[in-house]
Structures are given as structure tokens and as C-alpha cells.
Figure 1: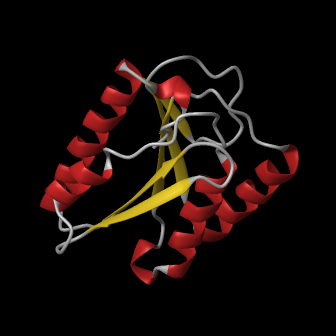
Figure 2 (figure 1 turned 30 degrees about the vertical axis):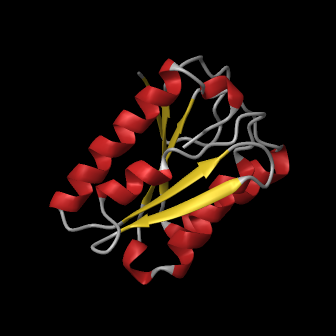
Amino acid sequence: MDTSGSMQGAPLLKAKALLLAISNILKQENRSLQVLLFGSSGQLCEFTMDKQNNAVGLLKFLQQGFGGGTDFETPLRHALNIIQQQPNYHKADVLMISDGDCQLSAQFNAELKLKKQQLDASIYSVLCAGHRITDSFSDEVVVL
């Protein structure tokens, strides 16, 4: 989930509400959830929601944020590494919740396409504000 400066206000509230709703669905399905908060290059916080870490822990975790700029490459790289390392995440989905105000480098975009194919993973983007001009990495984009 993007916590950059452009997400402040209503977009961030929408993002948090969506993430809490998804966490509830996954809990009912007895599935775990990895949440990554990100901002500028290298800014990343991680939370694992499972039987030990519940919605209360997630709510506390979501009080954090970065502000500033937006870097999609760090969280996307980290998310795919999690999928690769966790055997129970085979064919996992990545949900990118953002305002879409960021671009990927051509080199990373090529690496990402290859990694998605190797892991049989999909990336779904939810835009809480703003509009992406081009999106070369999402399998589907939804606007809230």
C-alpha cells in the first residue's frame, strides 16, 4: 500500500478501508496476508497477518506511513521475493493499492514480467485517486 505524500487524505483512507476488508475475507478463508507499506525508494515496512497477528495488529500497523515520493520498484521486488520464498504462496496475487502516480524503469519492467511468469503470479492495481497514463505491469487496474 502506497503511503506517499500524494496518498494523504481520502485516497489513504480508501486504501486502508480496502485493505481491512480484504484482510477480513482472507481471515475467513484461513489465508495469510503480507502487507507492505511503501513510499520513496527503499522505504518499506512489512506486516504478516496470520493466526497470531490479527486485525487489531493490522490497524496499528496501518498508522505508519512515509509521505514524500513514490517508488513502486522496491515493494514490487519485495512482494515477488516473498512469493518465491514462501511455498504456500504459489500462484499468489500482488495487490498494489496506490494513486498510480509512479513509473517503472524499462529494465525493472522487463525483470518484473519475467519474474511474474516464473512465479505464475498476477499483479492487480487499485487506484484510490489519480489516473495512470500507462501501466505496463498490472494484469488488471481498478479505479475506486
